[in-house]
Amino acid sequence: MRLSRRFLLLAALACPLARAADTTQWPEVRLPPGAQGFSLGGPLSANGMPMQVQGFLSKQPATEIIAWFRASLGMPLVENHVGASTVLGRAQGSRYLTVQIEPAGSGSRGLIAQTDLAAMVADRGEERRLQAHWLSRLPSGMRLQSLTRGHDAARHYQYLVLDSPHSSSLSRNAINNLMQQDGYALERELRAVKPPSQTLYFRGAAREATAVILAHADGSSAVVLNTVVTIDGMR
Image (cartoon, rainbow, N blue to C red; front, side, top):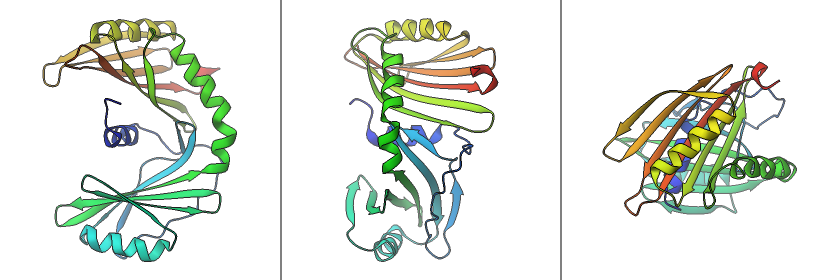
């Protein structure tokens, strides 16, 4: 996979997923004393995994926050290290809880993600249908690395990361054609040299989208696509 897992996670969280209009009750996760929590949107689905994600900031160093969560979450606890980040994971009933902590200046910051394992099983069929819907309309060889979706009372979001063996120009044309099929028109396009990329802005009736096409040195490319459709526009 050409895009790092960390990039995919941060990119997915940057997607403007607002509070979802459903009745799922996600248990509150206790934060360390003095930590400030903030919302990263309501429930979403990432690759068929229904999730709730929140962030937090603390003036305490990462080592102290990690120790606090180790004691707070209890055992058994899975611990991994990705770069400067420490990731703690633990099953809690039908949900799986993940806490990612990393240094931030003299303090620390973190992400807390809860995954509903039971709902994930029920959601797999819809996820496969959506993946097939996208891939069937794209050039052969393109692979869907990540699909995140969510909704609020007014809008429906989808966020895709695609890996392509084709050139950035071919991938760009394929995405442009696909967006036109879905009722989007290309409004403007920006190009960057470092890293070599193209950003396409689309708009249509009750919908908008942004696509970023990244060119790789070996001639292949990657696509990050974010679409937003109002609920009325889906009917």
